[in-house]
Length: 448
Image (cartoon, rainbow, N blue to C red; front, top):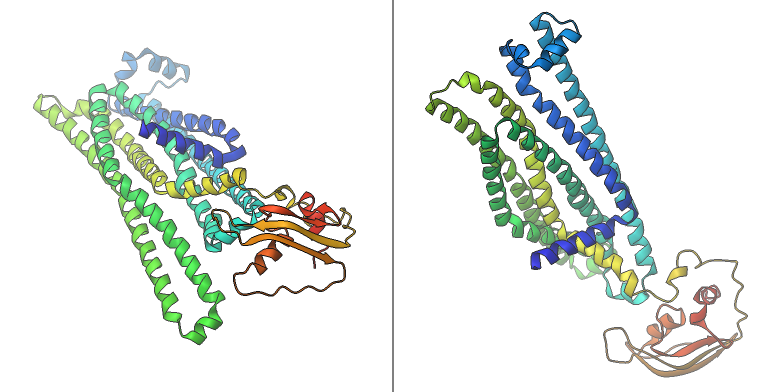
């Protein structure tokens, strides 16, 4: 039940981050199926072609081959074999061209979605309440906008599309091999599946941990570097350079360890696939010899399995690597989903106008004469202490007012509330009797 809920949550977050691009997904799936059929067709022709080249009698045994030979007037067997070879070569070239365009479409789809995702994040951060930005480190937001979107695009979105594409290819090729020799194909499938399952069970936690460490260390590098540069004057005077250098160095080391571990683990599926295919091919030869049969009769099947291995090994490797990449980038996708979801729960009253109308000159200026603060109190979210308690103040046009008080008494908070960056917990701020929250954009236009 827990695993089912986990995958359901993963799919929900995945589709949410796709946004409007979900509509293009079915077309991509159709292209994956077409590409897989061409892969299967190309490999499926290899075995019969080898049989045709080594055994001319096959033409008489299969009436359709004789009919094709007569239709094109190819009386000589060698010419017929040459023409069939050209047809197979054309199929492989078509398969390669289609594969290229599918990969191009995957890249276009993924990176266009990344650009759209950056726009959504930018819009969300602009619309969120000021208190959100007070609590969040700017390095965290920058990391979400740059690092997380890149990790999600390359490790989640592109990897998932490749996984689906290669999965169709693997299914089609195994179906073809099963048609040729179902016993050997099932043995290969069981052996390969067992190796991949054991591999995933062992490394999945390591991948998730490495992905989380990579994001954390990347954010820390950005945070400490920003502080070191922006506070350069004070740091130089205090001689604190080594403190920030050590912080960046430690985060960089954590990043390197996490990245190297992930890259090393990703190389394992290829070796597992190669071992599985080698075991099957050698096993086929050994069994044939033990049964006292000729290995020559096994050549067409061995040829088909050999050609299939050239396509299946990369496909199995890409599929396993893509799946582990999706696990590796899980934290990045969750962070993006959480930040984009904030807009539904944590939006300021004027958020719908922040981008489009903050400087709209069509709005008439408020005919300002006086500002009244009436019974205003304020406390920050997730705290119980009032920063301002029952404040009453009247400011008339032309007056010059100074706020004096000790540090932490609420001077800056009061100004932030006057600017509309915070909403009062209770009470009102009125300009000539009109609540400023009713039209913050017009109110801000007269603020110097």
